[in-house]
Image (cartoon, rainbow, N blue to C red; front, side, top):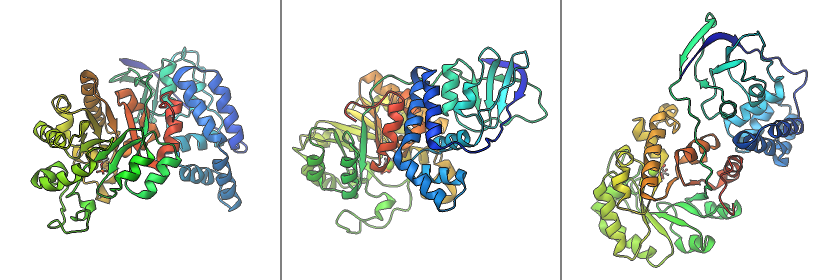
Length: 435
Ligand code: PEP
Ligand code: MG
């Protein structure tokens, strides 16, 4: 799709005084009532966040401690587990008047550094051919709103101040499809504290039990009786373990190479280690999955090994690009897949997740990672098998809509992220039953 036209730039005017959270919430609720569908749900979710008394108390405390309003709101919202995008939008809405979009009497392309929901609501679809912003991704709230208004929206482009007319070829103007499905919200468990918090926050089950760190299966089963529990067998050899097994025994040196012998490769080389673990899971009402699978043969081998212990719901983690690209063949061998976006991102972007200097590459919203997620979700749909996401990406409220739109059927996140994710899924109308 091509959009072409004269450029009009958006200008912002600072409010005489910042809006309070209550005023922000009322204005968001007013806006919600003017919309329907995704846009209304998203605005209501933001209003709910602004009305939260805990957020209010933290903000008041920080202001009393002498923080300037903008910083206090950003800090309060961040400590509250709200995404950068939500914080940014609240701060902008609180500090600036909704931008007045000009009415020059001809159709134009609106260019801005960033757009909030409030700004976007002032845009007249009859006048604005398209919107181009430097900041904010395709899942920003303004972008979701633009889609619901039928306005092409392109983000990540800084338009030179000299330019008066613009011609843009949009790669794909189709909306991120938000499937109207219920998406269960599960917990990742690595410790007894995680288990307690997962119960407190009302997780709908356990989507990833990291048995390198926590193996009290009976407590997990008792806490989540009747709910899904997915146990990952040892991701041994991973560096986080420091090359030790659960009893602290040295497993022959620290594996400093994330591309080395770990996960299923490690277990295949030591089947008795896996068998001992499968034996203790045998007879429990749990699903079991293997980490770091990269070939069909590994999936087949793992399933057969589980069968020896009567374990029938068997899955694989998709954390290696090869596994994502062979998702059809691999999923044909097992019952479900869980995408580990932490490892999938590091391997796709060739950026070791332990190296701080490469942290900007640990971005699961990179199109390459999202395409792999889509590939796996499509395979799951074709084969009628569930595909969840259990990496950190699932705990990013802004990414949730994208992952769900791509066809992911459940999310598993650190228990501390469950409240914020519940708000995000609620906003998308995708909250799982009973959450
Ligand atoms: C992942 O890789 O995304 C994942 C969930 O596994 P871990 O973080 O334990 O490697
Ligand atoms: Mg992993």
